Amino acid sequence: MKTAMVMGGTGLVGRHLVEVLLADHRYEKVVLLVRKASGMAHPKLSEQVVNFDRLTLKDPVEEVFCCIGTTIKAAGSQAAQYRVEVDYPVEIARQARALGALQFLIVTSTGADPKARIFYNRMKGEVEQKLAEIGIPTLHLLRPSLLLGRREVHRLGESFATIIANWTGWMMVGPLRRYKAIQAQHVALAMVRLAQGNQKGVLIHESETLQGG
Image (cartoon, rainbow, N blue to C red; front, side, top):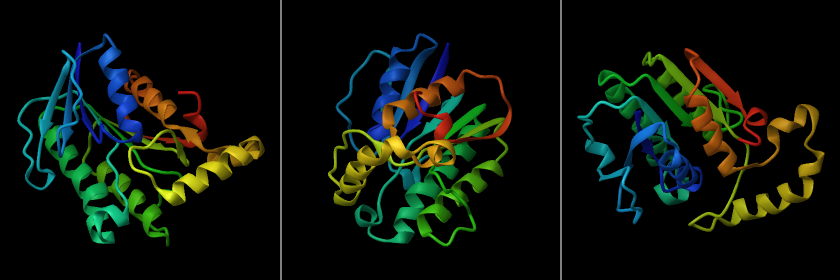
């Protein structure tokens, strides 16, 4: 049985992911890295309250799942958001690889591109690029469109976008399927499913392939 490490396990996708991993008999231990106690409890769960700016991993882990994310409003600036969504995952990946990690799975976004003009898309593209340079045997890059689900923190813009997505979802067919909103639970299920494969290299999964988990 395997050990999984999760970053961002208290967010929209992360909460579902942790539940799926804990229920999966293939995992004997789930290490959850958090900035503050989550309140979750399970015999297989090992929660570690950490400072990501000074984090040093010590124990080997086979697989790392990254769902970490924030907003400019919450972070305070683009630089602070970049630190959370790029610097933290890249540093964890480097340390995990040194300890023998074989897989790293991360949720980025549709439109991720290191050359994009839009900051968010460029940031997501840069984290993908930096992770690919580390050389982890298997790197899964999941690029979901707008995520649907109950959020702990209400975001007005995302709430409005969700309403529009629910009205127009039937229109998202053919080439537009990539931009159809997706349930966060389906992304979590897809992460665990992909982790069970035997593919190697950098593997990109666009949103339309994640629908339905």
